[in-house]
Structures are given as structure tokens and as C-alpha cells.
Length: 161
Length: 161
DNA sequence: GGAGCAGATGCGGTTAAGTCGCATCTGTTG
DNA sequence: CAACAGATGCGACTTAACCGCATCTGCTCC
Image 1 (cartoon, helix red, strand yellow):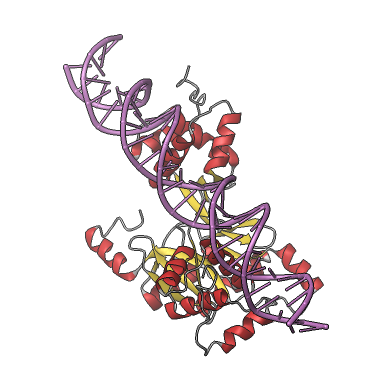
Image 2 (image 1 turned 90 degrees about the vertical axis):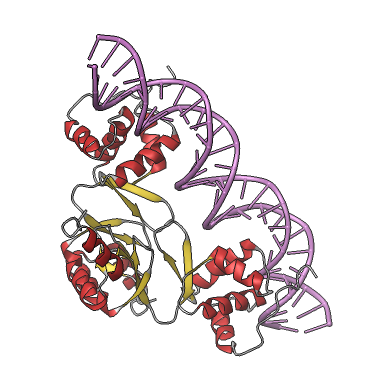
């Protein structure tokens, strides 16, 4: 009863099993459960703590350090992507359609940005400095449309501060 | 003797004094000392701990929490810029010539990237999504020229993994 | 289908970055 | 130069993340 708290998700996760195994990792209920949670988040970026809480509420309680290890392992296996939104907390998301993140520094809203939008920058960077932009998600801080509009109304000329 | 460990830098920092005061902050020896350290770092990105150590070695010892508070205050006053290189540690640099940072995920080397190189991305982003890229330094993870070359030699076809 | 083992997990303690409250001190203003 | 808002020092606290180790288990080979 101490160990058997995590039950494997019913099924439909054959793809996940294969990808875990392809990475040379064992298929454990904990790893499947973490993937299920991240998949159900559907694009949201969850911290280790978020994942741990969600697992607990879903009746798949597991140790915090296991969550950290599973997230690290799956990230290294390229099943997950680690994202740092700038608050010092690492967040994770399923690596399906790669994209970048524009984060509003005022309200915290995040907007997904296509890889394609960054391609020109990557090309230029490589041409000028030899630096090869990775496939890691970029953090693009700034103001979302709503906040920018609000600030423009209140101080039309001080937008650049 | 408990308080008077921090002595104001000799002089030549009149500009700093003015900018501190212009932000509505008091000109204290601690704030001047932090600015002096950051200025002497000349482009390097220092963590709060780095700054604290450097101050200590320079005979301007002050409390850790004071360093954190001074860095936060000066950042808010736009005298400093906070940069997160992706390891969860906040770093700071004098806000003089704004630029972005390309960080090699393999060797950790950082390359400064001009604002201009990112302008096209900013324009496109604004046109497509209304998101206004801020003046915050961007973290651009990838491979520096040296590491990219090394990896290309060892595995010419597996560069995308 | 059972045994054996490399690898994974649970548990508890530990580190590191950063924050907070409060008493004391000091830069600044009148 | 007196007074006070604001800054500092001190120490305790919070939070994210990591580590060692004993125990357990998915996988492989028979």
C-alpha cells in the first residue's frame, strides 16, 4: 500500500510507452502519469509543483523528488520541453508542436509564437556570429496587445519606458 | 564600526548619484558601491552572490539581503537590467547599451546580440499578434560557433537532435 | 512463467536563491 | 541641526530543487 498508489493510465498511451522505451528508459506508471497530466494540460506550462499537485488530486500521488526526476528524465529524452518564464521556476510542456513564448511582463499572459516567426532572426544570427539558435523555446518578454493598449490610453507618450 | 564598513567610492560617480536621485531614491554608499562593482565588471553578468563577494573582497562588505534589495531597487529604477540565463539564477548588468544574449547550451559561453538583429522579429510579432516586444534582454539558447563546429565534426548528420 | 539485476522510486535531509519583519541607523528636507 | 521617511543589518524563513540510500520493480534471458 505504500508503493502502489500510482496506477497506470488505462490505455491509449501506446505512443508514450514507445517513446519512453525508445529513449532507453523504463516504462513506469509514474512516467506515464506525468505524461498524461502534461498532455491533459494541453499547451499550458506546468511547474514541478503543479504537476505534483495535479497528480495528487488525480489519485496518482507520488513523491516530489520523483516528479522532479521524471520531468528531468523525460526532458532529456526530448519528450518534454523545459521552459523558464523568467520567475525562476522551471516549467514543462509536452514537446509536440515546437513554439516560442511571448510573456506579458504586466499581466503574465503568455502567447505562443510560431517557430517560423523567429526563422529570420536565426538565419541572421548564424550569418553574423556563427551562433546556431537551438530548438529551445524562446522567452519573449514584452506587453500583450491588451496591456499595451491600456498603457497607451493612460500615457500615450510614455510607452517606451 | 558595525555600520561604517561601506565607504563611498572616491568620486567620478556624479552621474550615478544623479540617476539614483532622479529615481526618487536616496544616494547611499551601498548603492554607489553596487553600481561601481557592476560598472567594473564591464559587460559581465553578475549574480547577487557575485556582487556580494566582490564587494566583500573590495572592503565594502554589506549584508546579503541589502545586496538583493539594492539590485532590485536599481533594476526598478532602470539603472540596472536583470537577466536570466536559464539556470534559475538572476543576473544583473549596467543598463548602458541594450543588447540580447545568445547563450551556448553546451559550453555556457554568452554572446551579445545587437538590438537591431531582433528588430524584424519585433515588427513581425507586433503585426501578427499585437504583442509589443519589450526592451528586456532576450535569452537566445543555442550553440556557439565553436561548439556547433565540434559537434558537426563528430556527428555530421545528427545535428538536429 | 520465474529469477536476477540494472534502474527507478520513496523518503528524509540538504542546499541555494531569494524574501521578510523588525530594530537601528542615516540621507534629506525644512 | 532637528526630525523623519526611508535604508540597512540581522536573522529567521520560504521555496525550488537536489542528493544519498534502502527498497522495490520493469525488463531481459532463460
